[in-house]
Image (cartoon, rainbow, N blue to C red):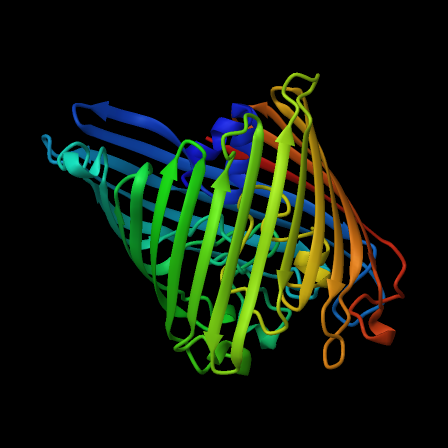
Amino acid sequence: MHQERRCLSISKAVCLAVAALAAGQSQAYEFYNQGETKLNADFLAVYGWFNSRKSYDGSSGGASWREGFAKYGVSAEQGLAGNGKAYGALNWVSSGTWGEGDAAGLSDGSERTTKIEDAYLGWRSGNLLPALGEDGLDISFGRQVVTIGDGFIINDDGLNFGKGVADGELNRGGGYYLAARRAFDQTAVVRIGGQEGLHGDMMWLKSDNRAQAKTELAAATLAYTAEPGTLAMTYIHGLDVDDAYASEFQQQRDGMDIYSLRGAGNAGIENANFAFEYAWQDKDAGAEKAWYAEAGYTFADIAWSPNLTYRYSRYSEGWDSMFNGFNRGYGTWFQGEVAANYAGPFNSNTAIHHVGFKVNPLETLTLGALYFDFDTLDTRDNLNMGGRELDLYAEWVVSDNLIINPLIGLYQPDKSLDNGGLQGGGNGTNVYSQLVVVVPF
């Protein structure tokens, strides 16, 4: 589902904040619009301050660091005299990390780089093929972000390790938490049928991310969308990994099959939202399964329109989280700002209860609380990453060109580094804080 469709369920201002952070997409300033030609200047800048009183890199101290990136370039659309539209973009990202590096020790604060992020071309059919509906055929290729569903398996290529691990071999140039780089290096995507009724897509993706072992895969989705929601089936086949960077675990992606059934919508109940996904991986080491079920309701007739959500998710011991990522906002699919980013679990060998609550005192302001309870499924040969986390956050859209997102996280693991966990300095509550500023144009 496109980001624009998700915007229908929340205020326009808050959706802008979620879109900027979750999609990592630059906003566009139209500087030329003549006839069938549109040219945009794209720009998005994000900067964050981070502090964690505990670390998860084998040390007993904390960490304080900063991250930032700017994404800039051009995008364009060109009408083809009734034969659809061509479109494309060319964007760069300049990124960096400063200070001590993140709390997991994946960066050391010296990362800096500028590289091409988006470089793609595409064509949409417009009304050229009436049987498929408006824009019923959409073909694109190049370097771009590709998402399947709500990112439970494939959200983007946003894993941004720094110089803190593997002697810097996995470094992408800064912005670990902010995921400054998200585009797949090579893609070919065909979408058929638009967004209503029966529709689907086929795609080929190849990562240039060493931390992802430069995984190459093919995927196909068949979906049906009606007023109550969407039901979809996806098949993914792993084609290759780079053995020079692949761990024994990642080598199983070569030839792995993934099957998924998912659904999302309101099921005909106004102000409600439901979602589920059940997926299984068939790989050399055996079958692995992951699934979630979620239900939420917005009390639209009450002041501030409070929204309450509950979700249960479960990932088997050897589940490969692949390319999942931050999609619908905090908690998807990085569950817990401390746990998911630094402390674990990392969407494997765990069951998670999640409760979310948010209100909108103003159209431009969202206040929220997220609670997570993590239970490690098998601790015999694995670290115990059980624990609890409470995150309190705000999303404040000051203007069209300034979004401020403060967050405080309280995380307490069941175990510390000394007795089978990851947190240094004991298993007391870690106080984590961050302030992220987004400047879109």
